[in-house]
Length: 468
Ligand code: GLU
Image 1 (tube, protein in one colour):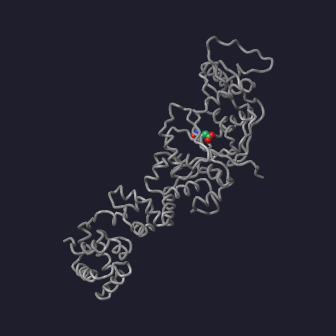
Image 2 (cartoon, rainbow, N blue to C red):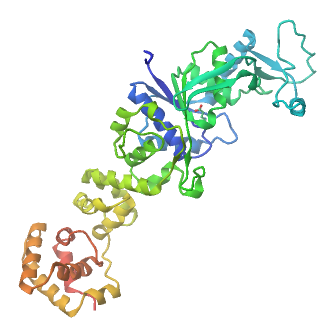
């Protein structure tokens, strides 16, 4: 049974670099879960690691999320703007006795850990400063600033039913009294996450499974605060094609690099969604279908593998299925970047000629340069191979007839057929020399369409000045 409480999920990146594929996929699952359940998707920037957090990284994350179409309903919230709130909760916990000051130095704690190791026990803080009824604490060392530790339960288990992994449990005896504030008073990572998830009313936390060990600690702090514990789902990582953790050595891991390389955000969403989630045997789907179908039950328990060939296949599908005008709008800046004329009114038709065989928008832009860029005459070997004396004669005949014809694809197609019949030629015997002569290459989409889009002036001019 689902609870009546409205669903609230979040994506909580640390802005220490661009948004990588793994982070984008986690965000996508949280986003889709919120959307599917008509809930709220929150963006929270976890920027308390001031040394490593940068504004540029925040911007890169926002740009990537916008590109993928994951608009947050609330946020971005920034942890560094919530320090007062963390201080307030720390104060409340000290007052309630769920947290305590610990004056042990890092060296002392290391010695405690060493002593535990020597006894064959798990290395841990020994609880010197943990208050217990009737216990007398040591005198406070002069001038020493304390850390604040969470008073973790020492017995029992902390368990949850993970949305991905199923039941998970930890013995509380395994968990140290976690430091939740440093000697300078700044709160630590796990503590900020807890206060935020509580204040932001999170009902479901979907995140990478590198956080599984944090979860029992966070659950215990939430319970100590009297907060409702969200449901957790820990998504396994993405592996590279060689089975090792996906990293730069497998190619681009920055989401926005895929924009540069000509992948459609629609295709990225589709492909990333299938990395670790499935809906029957559906491989190709749009954003709306993904949201409609998304459920955590079909998140995979095992790591998924990055497959660039499949990504290309998915991208090709989305390119093929996209309306010509929309596709032209997306390819236009890439044509302009190549110095081509992207303002042609017939750009959608040009794109339409190529889209069935393009794997990326970059390829489409290259293709479109046939019409949008300057004429590139055929290289000498193509001329020698295809512009034979017989072919030149056929081209001359075609040019003479074409001068008087109506310049539409249909009329040109009829003209080509008439020329073939008149000269007793087969289609390639005229079509290939035509392509070499007017397009500078032996392969193009349908030759009648190419002629029509090149325009009468360009075609007749190129036929009149065949390379020697
Ligand atoms: N800031 C954490 C990270 O980027 C995520 C924390 C969380 O989702 O709870 O890995």
